[in-house]
Structures are given as structure tokens and as C-alpha cells.
Image 1 (cartoon, rainbow, N blue to C red):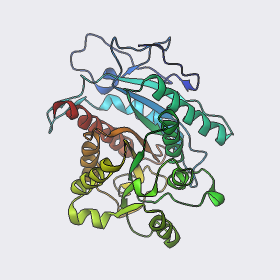
Image 2 (cartoon, helix red, strand yellow):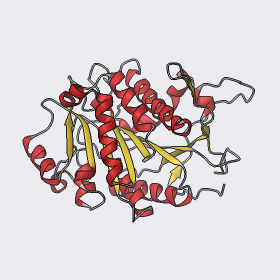
Image 3 (spheres, rainbow, N blue to C red):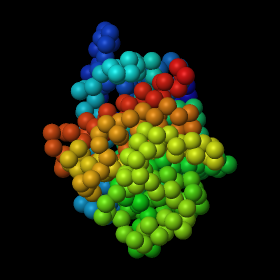
Length: 332
């Protein structure tokens, strides 16, 4: 593989000690950071790349989501790359940690520009590799999808969003913040409102005006109550089946506040009444199994608010379940 030109990336902030003699590695021993010189740790192509985006300055609510990529990597040592119920070994997947997108200390627009450039460059040089991005607040999703669109201008992109919120607040009032990424993508022409499927909406956490705007632009907003009537897995499959008819690429974005606050205390905007952990984990496995889901991110996790690392562990679990789905694509 050619060296990846990534001046917009910093290497991972730390590297786990690796014992090459280990026959059953933990996740932190299975995921390889890039070599010191920036070359691939694998002789063959990379299947999955992990990118960190430590940005939370663009969050409307107080957040330390910038700490998530580091916390995420440190949690890997608590997991095995083997799913007991599915009897799936993840180690055949070649997964590389590409480090973090560089962030400016004060200039949010520069941070966002770096994110777009990172995704665009990544797709141009490693088009067969599936990127998983660890945020960061939800503003990064708009930049990542715009970067993808820059690299693949002819593609029609759909969005599967797992979220308590619409994230459709007006840009003229809030700017490119964590409450506006989906509106940003729609109004920039990056994707169509009808190509957005948001599953997990509930309760008292969205305004009437946002619901009206969602309806006007054709966003498919599925409340958690609706999803549970059909079953969350069936709802996810339905959304994917509708998207696959219309789009070339499906981008999955997981906002951790889709979970009930009791299951995810480490979220800046978590609230009661959300999704159960087992519902989310099954949704991630189903999404990972779909061949048109070509990228994903996990956003809006605040490790400083977390209790006993439960939210961080759940996010890692969700990513691993997604990869179980990915590896099952080849077995189908």
C-alpha cells in the first residue's frame, strides 16, 4: 500500500504494548496503529480505518466530547475481538488506527476544514477501506459527509441517523454546531432530506418548528415508539431497504444520546426514555451487515460525565457489533 498522505492527522496519542506471541489478542492488541513512518502495518490492504476527531468546541451544550477518542482507545483492552452469541472472530479484519484529525485551539472553521480534508484525502487514496470516525460532537458528521462527497461527487449519499434529536436547528442562529449537522448537509446540497432516516426520536427534546422543517424537506423521522411497535431491528432493516433503492452510499451516524440516560450517563444531552442498550447493539450489527453502509461515526460522548465508563464501553461495544456485521457480509 502507498503511504497515506495525511498532513491533517496526528498519530495516536499513545500506543499499547504489543506482544506478537499472543494467540488470542485483546482488541487493543488486534487493532494496529500505523507504523511510525506512516506506512500500513499490513502487507495487504486495510479493511477498516479508525479516525479520531477530538472536537467539542462546536457543541451547543457543555461537552468534553473531545476526550472521547483517547478514552475509546484505552477501553479496547477490556474487550476480546470475538462475539460469543454470533460466534464471530473479528481478527481476520485488518483494522488500523490512523490517529486523530488535527484540531485548531480556537478556530472551529479550521477544525471543520481539516475534517473535510481528512475524509476527502482518505477516500481518494484508500477507496476500498471503510472509515469509522470517533468524535467529537455531532458537528463533525456534516464535515465528514461533505468530505466524502468531495471525493465521490457523483454519488448519492443517504444517512441512517440513530439519535434522540433531529439536529436540524437553523444554521443562521447556531452555525455549524452539534445541533445543526443534518440541516447543514441538506441546505448545502450534500444530500436530500428524503435520504435521511432518523430513528430514535422521542419525548420532549425536539421543538415543533424542527418537526415542521423535517416534514417540509422530507426527512424520515421515526420515533422510538413507532420503531418499537414494529421492532427496532425490523425498523432498521426497513430504513436500509428504502435507502438502498435510492442511494449509492449509506453513511451511519450514531449519536450516543439515542440511548436512555440510565444506559449512557456520559452524554452531553442524554435524556430519559431513550433506546435500550440491546436495541442499539442489534441495530449496529444490522447496519454493519448492509453492503451499502460504507462509513460510520460515533459522536456526542462525554467521558468526563461518564459513570464507571459505562457509556464508553457501550460505544466500543457498538463499534465491535458493527464490525461483526461487516465481517458477516463476506460470509453471506
